[in-house]
Image (cartoon, rainbow, N blue to C red; front, side, top):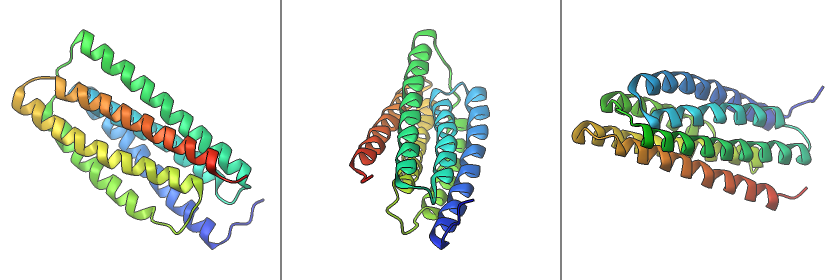
Length: 193
């Protein structure tokens, strides 16, 4: 059994709480995105699902050997990249088949998710140069920025009565996820073994 020092215990506690919060966001945003027919909300829900998996991997990596941590961070980056590809495919499908997102639902859910993600960012300000903690912080920051985009898209959908703002933000959420994935994978490559 692995003995954890005080910093490891702090990191594990933070990651576990952020994991639970992100899993809750996945459920809430998924239901709201389905009901609101919103590509951006569904993209954000899928992002929170992948974040939850990453936080679980990072949680398991705390206190382990550097090689184990690098493998966990690599898995995190690959999961995020797969999420981005899936979201882009869904945006393309919705663009071709049509969609009618509900702006007010998008705005309320984006605001609630932004508050949760802001809290997650504050929680993750742990003094650590650990590759998995940096990856976790990247996910929370990307989610917070995505929530702002969804809030704006919801307002535009409401104002214009058009679906394109929702689709554009869904694609931008995917692009930001891909950028985060490449940053994580680059950080893993630069990490000493």
